Length: 278
Image (tube, helix red, strand yellow):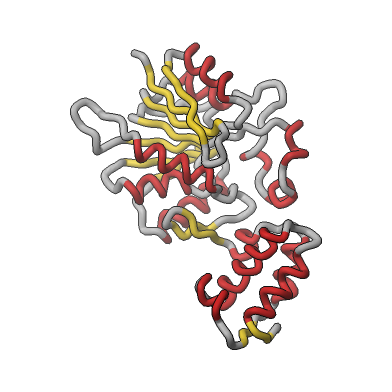
């Protein structure tokens, strides 16, 4: 139990975390911990003059010092209007992936004369974040998600229930299994080379599922190639590595897709939008 003013709590947590995190991140984590454990809003944390009690604060701080992601400590995260359960079986949804969802929503492909009732598949769904966010934005769409991890699918189904969204999730390995036909496929597949580990944070390396992150060093476009080869949808949306844009445009062209790269908020090539030239 740790009882003191909210301002002192923030300062205490930040001082404990600064040997492990940049100052801005340490402060953000301090706010997160206080909000999660007290139910206070961000505004309340900044303005509250009284005292607060946080049970198990030292245990929480110790986990953060061991680089356990704060989302895993509390078991969930807020993302694009969703309350998502997360665990080490799933990646933590990121801001770039939220950008992907927004881009998909802004360029709805027409199906015949209709532009509404799309049949959409999220490949490598993990927590279900992409599929659920698309369904939340477009209730008229039929949205499904696939993953080869049963543990991840269990989380995705829980997230569909807790957010009251009708999204179906099923088990499949996109590298070996066949899938049906869809109006659009969206995917944030593994794309990180093992040689890029040195550029990654300790939180990710230690705790997030490696199978959802890494591809063979010799074939970083493995998943994109397989999805393009299936010709399972006339429209493809991908999140990509900032180093893979040009190679992916060539790959998409080889499989009959006209593609373009789009940039994320940091000015990096982060997404590919491809349409099939039938």
